[in-house]
Image 1 (cartoon, rainbow, N blue to C red):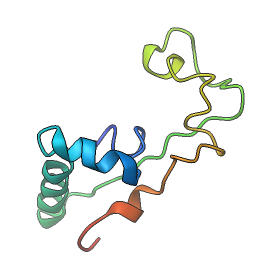
Image 2: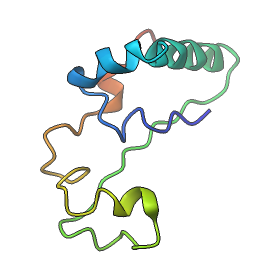
Image 3: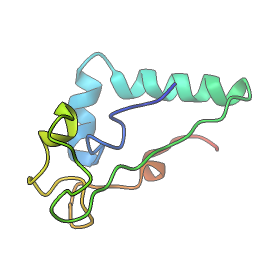
Length: 91
């Protein structure tokens, strides 16, 4: 399972309540991660980050071109977090 959105959409403290309210997304994600680890399946976290000016983003990429120029997902983004910081349980 790839928890797309866990890091990309800034699961920073401010967003956690909204994600929990939307059907318990973070709770279901935590359950899936724990079950995967229990079954010996590797769980991988990916951090998405871009250089200033977003030279990596193609205008044809609808997801990333929507955030290009917003300052999000760059080294200076205050909402960018380490996904491991929000991990519960053991590795």
